[in-house]
Length: 238
Picture 1: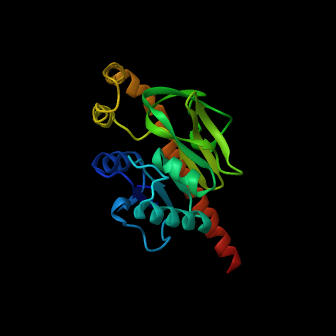
Picture 2 (picture 1 turned 45 degrees about the vertical axis):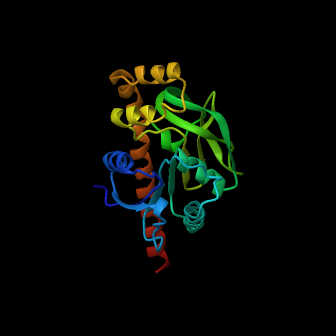
Picture 3 (picture 1 turned 135 degrees about the horizontal axis):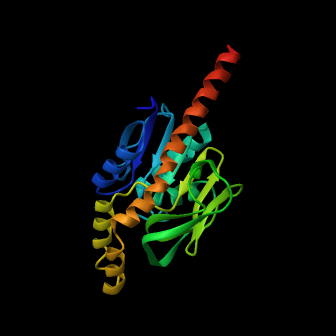
C-alpha cells in the first residue's frame, strides 16, 4: 500500500465490478462513495479522488449528478488531484467548462488509441496502445486550457488540466467485466456488432490492454509527488 488515501466516487449503479477493478489496480487506501445514492465525502481530507464510469449521462438532470458535479468542482478548486474514467472523464470535462454530447452510437470493444504528445499519465505506454472502450457519449470540446493527450477516430480519449487527468477508455477492466458489460448491451447493439465485440474479448487483447493500466501507477506517483511538495511548502512556511 502506498500510504495514499483516495476517494473513489463510484458512479456505477451496480458497482461490484467497478469496486473490484479499482481496488485491484490502484495502490492506495480507497474510500468508496456510492454517488448514485448521493453519498459524497463531507470534506476534502484525501490525497486525490477518482470518478468512475457510469451508465448515466452527465447532461441528465438528476440530483445525484448535480451533487457530484458540485463536489468535484470544489475538489478541483481546492487543488485535489483528480482522475476521471469514462463517465468520470466526461463529468470532469463538463465541470471544467468542456462540452459533452451523445454520439448516437456505441464505441465498444478493444480499440486502438494514440497518444498526442507526452503526458505524465501515459508515461511508459506506447504511442499507439490497446484499450477497452464502452461509451455512447463523448467529450467534443476539452475544457479551456486543457491539453488533449489521447485520441482515436471517435474523438478525445484523454485530457489534462492542472491536477486533473481524465481518460475515456477503461484501463481498469478485466475480461469478466468486458464480457458482462458487452452482453448487457444485447438490446442496444445489432447482433453482428455484439458478436464481433464478444469475439474480440480474448486473452491476447486483454494482455495488450494491460499496458494502459500503468496510468494508475503514474497517477498515484503524481499524487505522492504533489503531497510531498505540499508538505515541504507547509514546513517551509512554519
